[in-house]
Image (cartoon, rainbow, N blue to C red; front, side, top):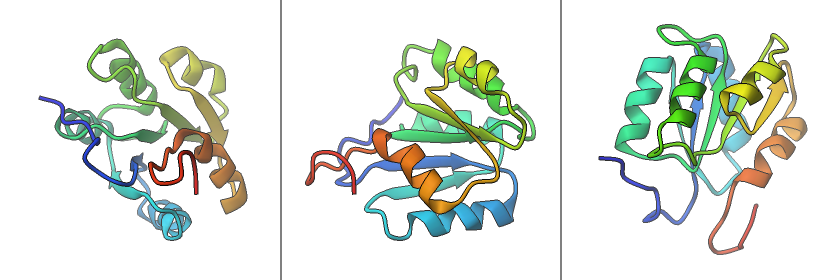
Length: 134
């Protein structure tokens, strides 16, 4: 059973990144945002987590252990229960066309800085008390 994140006052963002240093780097971007975020390290864990609790936004690296990010994206996009989850893909390899074909809404090439990342994610975050974004 998939539980939506509707009961939360802030959006839930699931970030899937295998590199712990890059996860910390990304975490620093979220400290001032009014959203809840969680991290996963591989594709298999991601698929299990979204069946338990649906994120409002999934930010997905391509290079993941167990199941790669593009395969995760295809799986999520092909399942009617999860197909509406917005997926943003990032990678150090330019695979934008493959990511969009797999069902991603957008693609960002690594490395990037906080302003670029904030601009990348902000259209997909909805804040109930403000109507749109931080």
